[in-house]
Image 1 (spheres, rainbow, N blue to C red):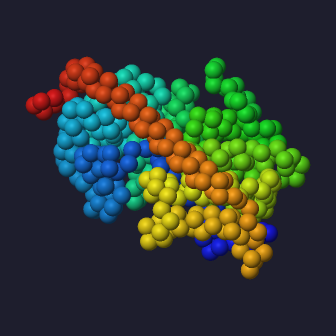
Image 2 (image 1 turned 90 degrees about the horizontal axis):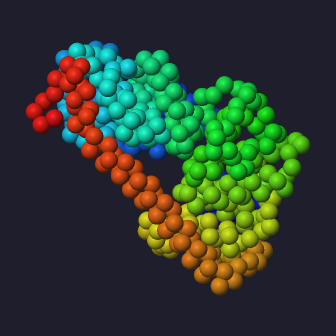
Image 3 (image 1 turned 135 degrees about the horizontal axis):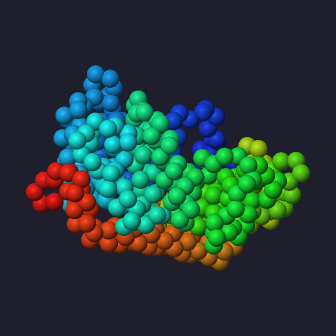
Length: 395
């Protein structure tokens, strides 16, 4: 780099070093669960949370686990809650018999899965089922992988084909190598991955880029990272332009690591760290914008300069003042005006507000979908009763 970096910037780079160890099945499941935007622990009911807890603690180890009667008691409690409107509990009740049949022994709950898909739709229904299969790779030790490996990819692929971006990254990692793939009608890409990257893996890159185009933050970062690692024969100007395009989207969709990379690239106009090569016109205003945006992401939209309240905000302000005034001791000349500083702060607030508005809109749409499905629960109760499932009072 042409200029000395602060400790803060150096820590940025260290935080973004790629992991070198191979992920275990449980780690991979946890990663995909998080990147597939699964429900947070706070969103899960106690019934769902406790069953998951038994498989992430010593309770799952041989000799310390639940016996069959305890599992069936928990399952009945889960089903009771599910039929009172807990959609997450319904998804778990649909998945459990495939992963650990002792839970549902004596109860035929096969009507639940098609009911979820029918009333949530292919996109959301298959996604939710896929997400709950991922719970069962995260135990210690993991449960039988066969039903998970067979069913989770199946559900995510169907969800992806129905247009759900939350399923597309998982689908991209579980497709055969090769180029024999035609995008679904109406889901063609605006910016298909060029052959110098995608050749031999067109379907993998189709799903990754499609997720990025639909607004998945991590997918945008991942696609940009692929362009950033330029190899012999790749056109540097084109790849650099695509890096900036995708990482800007990743930052605006909430992935702060992308903002960190962009701030460093924009400060220097070039970067070759960690096998990447990105060139662009130096722009200190943009560098400060990305730092301010990242700071806002960590403090609910506020730009806090006090280090005691926000280390990211204090670091962003340090760089803002450096760009405004320069640092003669290291021959760093001013590269941003006061009006540019003010504009960058304003733009970072607008970008943050747009990010939160998108989040709220997506959450509201999902909640409306779940509420609509709850209206059809009497239909599911009737289907379960028809196959002999015993339900408690109030169901």
